[in-house]
Amino acid sequence: MKFIKWFLIIIVSLIAALLVVAAFLPNEMKISAETDINLPQTKVFHDVVSFTDRSFWDPWISIDSTAETSVDFEDMYAGTRFSWTGKVVGTGEITVDSTDFGNYISSTIRFGGQKTPAKVTWRFKGDNQTTHVIWTFQSSARYPLGRYALLFLKKQIKKRYTRGLENLSKRLDQKDISLSSLSGFTIVNRPEMSAMIASASGDMKQVTAQFDSLFASITRVVSGQSLEVTGPPFSYFFDLKQDTGNVTVYCGLPVRTTGHPAANVSAITFPSFRAVKAIHTGPYDELPESYRKMMAYITKNHLKATGEAWEFYLTDPQVEPIVTSWKTEIYLPVE
Image 1 (cartoon, rainbow, N blue to C red):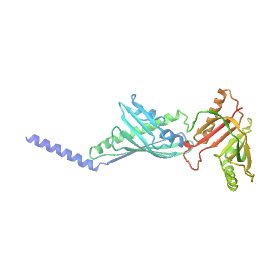
Image 2: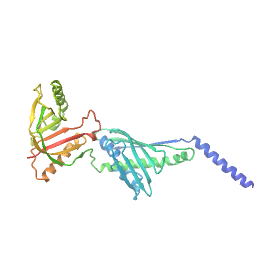
Image 3: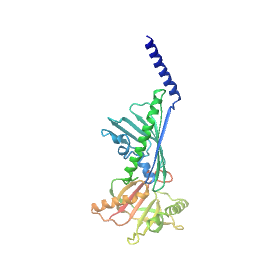
Image 4: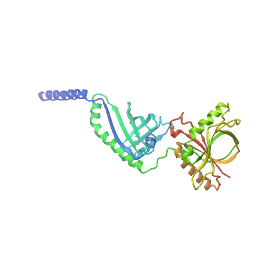
């Protein structure tokens, strides 16, 4: 009986000691891993937030050959969900809660039937060549066993996060990330259009650098003459010199009736034309790839391009800061 008594006293004492120690253990775990990736900030951000390659670099899923994953993508990122199931990793999901485009991702992660999710954040800081990435995991735990679990899991999670960033960096080194997409192609007859325009000539870098001032001039004249704008702003590229790369461009606003020339702004009526049409969604600096795809379509379908191009800017960058949402309607005239 004495043995049983002392045994119970020891057990109770141990339990009491464990409870006392647990009271002093942190009820929250926060760990971070960092790395530098040799890609522009917006591209790294887009690849991470859209879960494009998550199953390839995730430090847990990538080692579970039975893992199956799915992505429910939302155009504005918030609400995008990545789910998984596997014999080793079990089940779970990550949901994007909010973003600051190119800079920050806040999301929640749930494992199995976990009621209280953990928080995962990403921070990106860099330039056009290198991005510094900080990946952070934050979770709370119930007293007392949950606090011990956090204590023992902290080092393992830190190791996994570090490995995950190494995997991500290697994965991104092997691919060309695009922030753009291109719609299907259609052949249309673009109707006659009246417009107020301003022009520039030079190479593409020179002429596009003048776009802001050209559109500002056009807007002032259109507003001053109380003209009714009937569509989005556009650019019309023509007279491309193959030897120098120089081109002439008309920037313009379509109007119901043409106004009067003023300063560097002219009135013009463009005739109707036949063209291959597509919608480029994404940043302007990736437009050349969309042009390449459209020209390949023209060649494949035995059409003859005139060498001209039209861009109608359906999204105002001053209103929509997320470049992956910018839509540009492209027309390549054909004979």
